[in-house]
Amino acid sequence: GEVYNHIEVYDECVKAGWETPKISGSDCESIAHAYAKFGGPKTAAMLDGMFAFVIFEEDAQTGKVKAFAARDPVGIKPLYYGRTKCSTSSDDAAAYIFSSELKALVGHCDPSTVVAIPPGHYWTPEEGLVCYYNPEWLRNDDYAPWEDESHNVT
Image 1: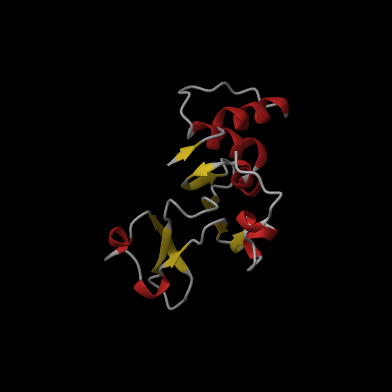
Image 2: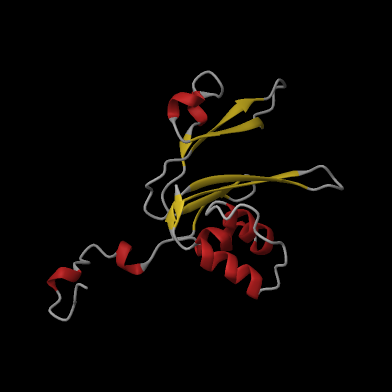
């Protein structure tokens, strides 16, 4: 993937008081900084690019692990997840498995649990799938800017 506005994303972190310096200069590194400063939903909404990512965050005191996964608004980069079954009779997931290719999930998770994260959505185990990108023009069936005489292509 690629985050086109990674410099602006990191600059927003700094403006908001973030003091941790960039190490690699990679566009992907800006995702980690933004997630640490703003959390997952705001980070996903800030990004402009083609991406799919998963972040696991462990609370050092409790050992509890939080997960956050997001996919770019247009869906250029795929992201799938599935669940393994617990060894008990419970239906709770023993683990979530993520991949950018379906074939990587084969043999590792219950096929009936495999889900493609839709474009413009993020996922957490607590919230499930949440749409973070849904502009009105995308919901409008008759959106055709090329038919509007005042629309200029630059």
